[in-house]
Image (cartoon, rainbow, N blue to C red; front, side, top):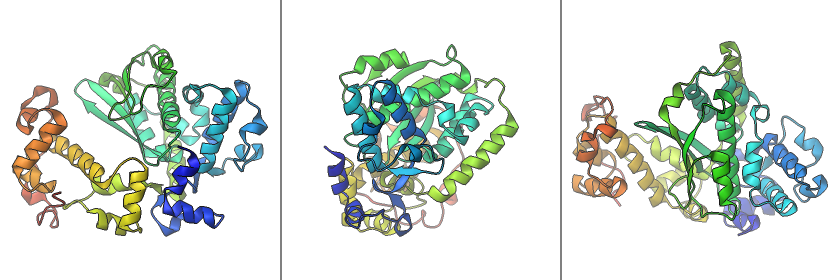
Length: 391
């Protein structure tokens, strides 16, 4: 699939392209492939990486619509459409299928702007990752990063919020390789160790390169893009971290996020589902919130390889795991909150998600956490009423 076909799949981007301009973010709450949301920090690293492998700079920028001067401007931003053309040029000119990995390894703190300073001056690795999660949209607007801890395992996930096809593998490689490099730089190469890396796409021709870079077991065709490591590493102190510099960097990061708060469509839908208090919004309600039509939303999600039902299922699963593990809510109460018609339907879904029943999961020492005292009385008024979608 070409980047042009991706763009053609989204009505908003078709209108933007037809008018010869950018669709204004003020019209809606998410960005598309034509909006200038990508700071040039990382595209500049891609150009430098490809040039170091023999690619001609002028040919790298061919049809991208920017110049070398644009790449040197701290305020400049390009669209994912332009980024896709640059990526296509770089892959073609270098002939290196592993370019995404090499590019990601070259994204160091110096290419992260204020966010790089925030990472280097955090008190420990856990705080550094928290800063990365808070501010990652500054440099990575097409990905949502998240961290979860399961017993002795810590799992850092990168979820696509805008379809990057046909460069999904390239983009994911760059993000995960960059994260790996950033962490190694702040805690030390001898300290950082990756347990496993899991990718959503099939093994590429350069699959062996993954093990060389990450030094861990690699699995493809997995449900999510994840880096797994020992949770105890989160407490690793960062040498010579300066609290004053960290505060200043955080302020700069917050200022940079201000004018560019829009997210990719998938990110917005996930956020609306995950943050809903009470009944989970249905497709019509999501469409109104996102200032689009149900048909457009359905088609846009389909173009990105997902659907409302899939996202609803993922949101229910996340909430169910959290409430079963860390609260005293009864399974009947959880079923109602998640919009299931009855507790039996919830139990069947939970077993499908995890391989065991909610009761077994709650009793398992491996999943035990301090239980929060949450009851029906603590529900907001809207949540105490009728449940959300039951389909």
